[in-house]
Length: 326
Ligand code: ASP
Image 1 (cartoon, rainbow, N blue to C red):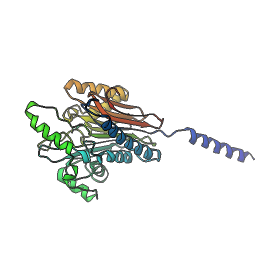
Image 2 (image 1 turned 180 degrees about the horizontal axis):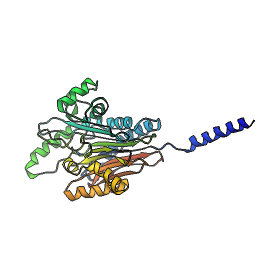
Image 3 (image 1 turned 90 degrees about the horizontal axis):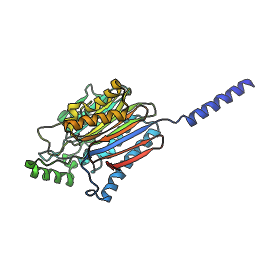
Image 4 (image 1 turned 90 degrees about the vertical axis):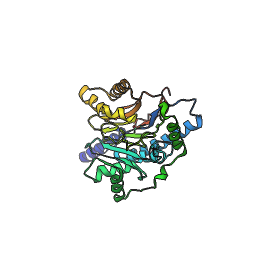
């Protein structure tokens, strides 16, 4: 009799525990920061971007709810944006001076600080998958160019002809920029993509993927595939993905610096991002950042007029925005 009662009590406790202890998860994405104005981006275009960001968030949330690891989520979410011509990553990558596309990507896990990255790849359909392969199946962190492609091919990743990455609008941007080059016209690279995720097991992961900067030359590599500059994750602090003028992010060790501000100065994730964006501005750099801590606190900061961005949390909170004052 007593045993029966104890058993019922245990079952009831377990029931209430599973019903009310909500499994915490969070997901933040960006689709690039840059010069954006409502006057120049018509409503249809805004809606297109928002729909793609929504698709990526919904996919990520479905995976997180199902118990997927933050690594799986970061890769799947970034692939959606890489496959879209809207963003400067994968399909919509910007052009080099020579009229080719060279892509960079990186990923880092917060639980063990494993990381992988590829730089200057020309034929890998989804560079974020290549970054993951480097992290999980090589003894290296960063592979570049032909070697990175050969490794990815051996890992069975899908390869494409460089022409796959052609989009008219990015090609026209290149031509426009080359025409105005002497006037030092600003280049439009907006559209790097990034994702930071916290899974139900409390593990953080960060990933970033980009075509780099329009008209780049001499094998230029930016911050996006550099661990500590464009991407960083540690379960002790936060997961970070950056977008903006890479040369400044590299000089600052931007992503790692945000983690350091949290670790050594006890700043919250938002405070740390704001401080780092302040430093970026002081140096003359522009761009943005998304970050997420192990408690699900998020930050989406930038010093440009816009950043494609969004987040979703297990609390039901959700936002998708483009302009600074959205
Ligand atoms: N950070 C990228 C790079 O410098 C570009 C961007 O995010 O807009 O390659």
